[in-house]
Amino acid sequence: MPGTMLGMADASWAADPAGRPDPAGRIVVVGSGLAGLRTVEELRAQGYAGQLALIGAESRPPYDRPPLSKQLMAGAVDDTSLRTELESLGALVRLGERAERIGDGAVCTDRGEYPFDRLVIATGARPVALPGPGQQRFLRTLDDALALRETLLPGARLAIVGAGWIGAELATVAAARGCHVTVVEAGQAPLAVAMGAQIGALTVPWYASAGVDLVLGQAVESVQDGGLALAGGDWLAADVIVTAVGVRPEVSWVESSGIELDNGVAVDALLRTSRPGIYAIGDCAAFWSGRYQRRLRPEHWEVALRGPVVLAANLIGGSQRYDPVPYFWSEQFGRMLQYVGDHRNAERLVWRGSPDGDRWSACWLAGGRLAALLAVGLPRDLQQGRRLIESASLVDESRLADPAVPLRAAALE
Figure 1 (tube, helix red, strand yellow):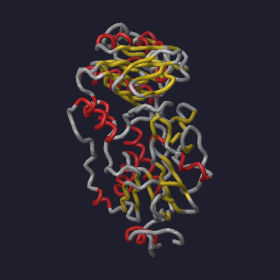
Figure 2 (cartoon, rainbow, N blue to C red; figure 1 turned 90 degrees about the vertical axis):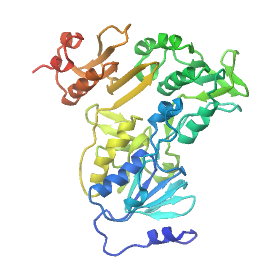
Figure 3 (cartoon, rainbow, N blue to C red; figure 1 turned 45 degrees about the vertical axis):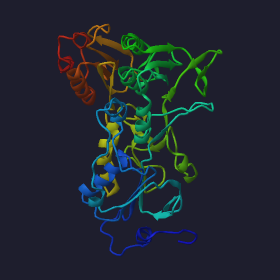
Figure 4 (cartoon, one colour; figure 1 turned 90 degrees about the horizontal axis):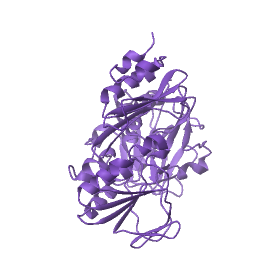
């Protein structure tokens, strides 16, 4: 291509082969995380035999992210690679190569151009940084996790900005490793953005019991060498600072493409973007949910694992609709939290069990149906609640609230 230097593999890719095996032609997948890898795997599993390329900005082979803040940070594992034999997929794999823009029928990277007939955007999300010249660490990549783990030494002063899922999981591990941990949260409760302040307030005692200092209602002005400058003029000294205030979809390279963006790449129920032949999946994709009548962008492992099954089918001519019930789990302070559904339009909150105890569930209702459920130490509630949400069954609130009654028995015939 004029003005572009291509390696031998890229030149072979650029050639337009005769006798394409199916209408999809050449498929390029940008993003080598779980969502991108699973898309490639599913395409092959579903019979696609055409040209396939996987391009990823990270130089590491695909790996699993959930263990980074759990088993890997605790030292139980050193590697979370997905152990996939990339060569067996029969794809051109380009790692350590960053996509820069989408041209007219081609992806342009920092090394070359890749013509496509179908394109999948699976570039995930990037962590939000705070202002200031001091070193702030993140927990997003495997390299982030390995480098951070080396700093979690007994006696180290660790400041975590953000009492969300990642902040709580990291605080759990760091405290167990003997660090002096302080979590600074701008909201009035942990998990306030994700679960609401009422639920989040129930987790406050967990921090104290683990020996973690929790500072609520405190914004951070900037990250400085040796600590945090807090809004209002206070100072928090720290040896290690981790910023865990959320992520943003990694879509800056798509902005000039004309593709509609709406808290990520906007896709329809078939995972198609506003440009024909271009799809999106994973943390960067905001899909339309008929169940909840809004766009959802759950930043969860299960979306990356299961969404590509639908996506691959549609890439090769199918018309499957993608409308899962979101699911997420977290391990923090010796507890397993499992969340399913979406509670943002819920009308009522019903408790199963005492929220002051170690095993309870919170059930959100909308229109007499279960819209979402948070189970703490009750995996059976989670499993049965998920089925209730999927079935959209009306429920009996009194039976729902009785922890002695199985959740499935709350469904009205």
